[in-house]
Each structure stands twice: as C-alpha cells, then as structure tokens.
Amino acid sequence: MAVVISIQNVSKKYRIRHRVQDNGLRHALQELALYPARLAHTKLAGRNGRAPSKSNLEPRKSTKEEFWAIKDISIEARPGEVVGIIGRNGAGKSTLLKILSRITEPTEGRIGIKGRVASLLEVGTGFHPELTGRENVFLNGAILGMTRREIRDRFDEIIDFAGIDKFVDTPVKRYSSGMYVRLAFAVAAHLEPEILVVDEVLAVGDSEFQKKCLGKMREVASGRGRTVFFVSHQLSSVVALCSRACLLEHGHLIADGDSRSVVEIYQKQSLTLSEATLAGAAIKRPGRGTMRFEFVKPEQTIFEPAAEKRFSLRVITNDLTESPCYASLVVFNEDQQQLFAMDSRTGDKVLSPGEPIELSFVLRSPWLRPGEYRIDAYLWNVGIIDRWEDACRFGVSNNFTYPGAIHDNSIQISVVLPDFSIETA
Image (cartoon, rainbow, N blue to C red; front, side):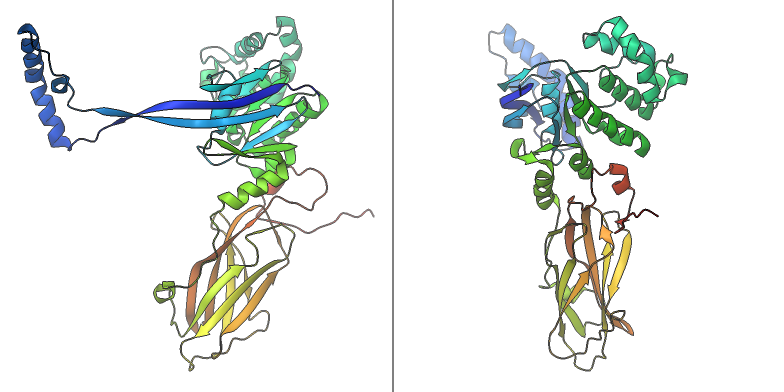
C-alpha cells in the first residue's frame, strides 16, 4: 500500500534567549539613571574619533541556547492508519504535528505528503475570529482546495455535528471554547481531507462530544481510508482508536508499533512508581512505633485491570509488650479518592508481636481502570501503631479483557471497572 506520509530524519531546532541575571531592583534603577550619561559619553567618543564602547549601552547582556524540540525522527504512514502520538509534556508531539501541518518548517530532514491535510491543533487555529461560523466553514474548505458546491453539500452535516445551528451566523470570536472546538473538529473531519491531524484539543469538549469525535475518526480512517495522526494523554483513547502508536521522549522517537504495547512502555516510564522501603522514614511516621512496617511492595510495577494484584509486606516488632494488632492497606487513585481498604481483621488475620511477620494481600476485585495508584499502610488495635502514607505505588495498564473496542468515556468516568457478563433471557 502506498505511503501517504513520509517523515525522514526530521529535526527542529529553536534558539532560546536568556538574559543574564542582574543584581536586583537597586541595580536596575542605577543602570536606568546612568543611561543618559552613558549615551552622551558614547556620542562624544564618536566625535573625537574613538570607537564607542558597546558595554556602555548594554547594561544587561543576554545569551542564546539551542534547543532541539525533535531530533532525527522517521515515521511512515499509509492510508487507513490511525497513528497515536504519545509522550510527556515537552516530548515534541505538538512540534511534530505543526511540521506535518506545514505551520513550521523542519530544521533538518524532509517530509513527503500525498493529499490534503486538515489540522486541529489548538483552539483558534484556522478560524478568523471576525467571521461567522458559516463564513469560516467556507473559508476552511477553500483552503483545503474544495469547491463551493462541495462545501455546500456537506454544510448541514457539519453544523449538525457541531451542534451550533443557532449560532452559525454569529462571529466565532463570541463562541465559547467548547463551541469553537466542536465546529473546528466538524469542519476538519467532514471536508474529507486525505490526512487528519488532531492534537489534544478534544479535552475541551464534554464526554458525549468526545465520543462522537472518536467515532468520527474511526469512520474517517476505516470507512474512507483516510490517515489520522492523533495526539492524546488519554491512553485508553489511544488504545481504543489507534492501530499503531509512536512514543516520543525528549524529542526522540523511542518506540513505534502496536498501540497497546507502546502505551505499556510509556506507562512503565511515566508512572512515578516505587517500592518504598523503610530506611530512616519509620522514625518520622505517626503511631506508637512499637511495631513497624519494614516494607510494603506490589508484586508487579504494572498490573492488568482484571489480573490478581498481590502486595507483600513485612512487619517487625520493637516492643514485645504490644498487643496483637491488624494490618490495613488503603488504596487511593490519582485524584486522591479512597477506593477501598484491605483489612486483615476482615480476613480474620491477627498479627502478634515477636518474630518478623510477612504477609501478602491479594486483590481480585474490583477491576481498576488504567492509571496510577498509591497505598497507605496502617498497623492498629487501640489507636494507631504505625501509619505509612504513600507506602508504595503501582500502575494499571490499558490491557482490557473486555471484547471489542472500548469507548473512552466508559473508562474515564468510572472509578473502578466491573467484572460482568451479559446473558439473553
């Protein structure tokens, strides 16, 4: 199958100017007061045939630094491919899309594109604020090389998809950010470009509109053989929508392949996971300290949503007169919501002081949605013996066991995921 996008060893360099730090407000006022005298001195020196000193007129100097936003990236894409671009903030994703959209030129390398490119990079891109929604639709279509008749044939579908029929003749500068994005996406997707480039702008829309956009991108790619480049931090959207993903890090392409595999690589690198060990931290932890956790750690750094999740812990005794106690592991999500607790009292397990105690807590349900989780660990009986906040962290991957494609909103709006089946009556 023919290649529609060929990115060959592309790099983009920017020059960043830094001002040398001065000595504060006093120094700045002093330089300002002396500037007229220095200027007069410089002019007098010029009349007397002496070369004026530039330092007299440059009280504050600056330096320049070269910054490579992307470096030596090569990617090829074919018709019908949906390519997800993922990575941390500053990895070079938006720079790559701007080069694809011909907004900026690469410093090195070359890009070959066959077909029209429609871009949706940020709110405001491609629309004239003084023109109405109707006028901007026709303007964008003309930019893409479409005839007025072609645009008119699709106009009603575009406005219906965007849901702005009451405001179609209102200047877009009066639109809310959500209305702006809805219209911009509708124009980009319905005017049938060969290549659709979409940045993280869909986060502006509500969940229902995001679902419509994801469905439209699937239709554009699979039904009409268009190529889609899609940047998103919502990894479940990337897995559900994209057949392939590219991972950028510090401007370099470090992985390119099956979207699920590449997303898992990214998760392992991006999650701030740790198997926190005791060291000197136990001294500062709340509680009586007569017994202490020596470690709490997950069996794996990243679990699959439906897999058993095993957590090991070790408890040591500092005072043999302590009464028997219980251990609790409390699980929190990224939004700091407490999801549930696993308590040894519920499992009828009592911890008696003495020899070091090793236990494993095994979590089977509920399933956890993709993301990062933390565990707070407690030893208690009458009062708290040891409270270890952020004792360990673990991640959950996007490797769902549900059949078929997963709509993003069915994952993102959930706190946990259900283990369920559907049966006919």
